[in-house]
Length: 413
Image 1: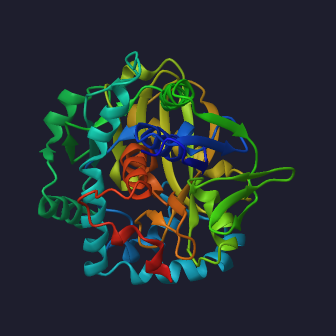
Image 2 (image 1 turned 135 degrees about the vertical axis):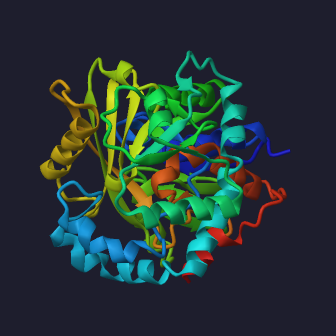
């Protein structure tokens, strides 16, 4: 049906490649553009590797504002600011504050739950077409906490209960049975037995990319600077070339704003900077990802060792890596597991985040042949395939049986 229709995608991360694979299933010819090779050290490479279908409650919560000052002052806390970036962040923060009412919190949670509920089946559709080679483990994900900030824990549990998220509260003994190598600093926790984790996100991404090429997809390592139009057909413009398509998708994460600004869309996309380090040859210490909720970071057992990930740092795309955030991860890991060897691979990546903590998926406000798929904050890895499935259905003008209005860019205009 769409055999001669050509779609161009900007972004070769999990969003861009997922969009491409689902478009190919519908018969579209697809070309992906990225300034880097797929699997480069961007967010799809360096994330926590969690498949988190339960994670419907985001950072825009009724309790979060009261906690922000303490988080910023704590050297072990989950939140940091690059002070030179504060003036730029002020409009974003004001919008964020308006999104922390109970009504807005529940609006976000319901609409995240709607897509998270379908996230694993969408992955399975793609996994069926590749050899996974034990790169995904189905051992659940464990959250633990000490006896501080228990109101926040109650709120999370209550909201997820309201949405019908399956969760299993665990006591100290049950946590010990699941992860005997953790130091016993914890008070309680919650276990999501159906969640999964990736042993190596980069390898999975590259398997998807190989599948895309095998199905006739084209990849061009070119930095697209803007989008022009010939009548209604979008044209990707780089330094040297122009590429014309029937439809295009902008799926380049935190960098998407540079393009949407030129399309005269006022989308308040910013970036949460996330970090990781590895402790090589230590992945036997944990059976599954463990998140220490009070400090907002987690540890995932991977092929590269234990990947320690986390912290939310607001500081834009240009500031250098913060050594204090790396130190924070190392100290937190040792607090949880005791002695660990010297760490490796200090990594910084950018999570594309909007102040209402919902992604943008769907057509552009001004150009009906331009589609967006970005802004998935901490859940970009989990939501790649379902987002690709949804946007490909929009492009093909199919009914998804979902309410897609909450993800539209029109909510900001």
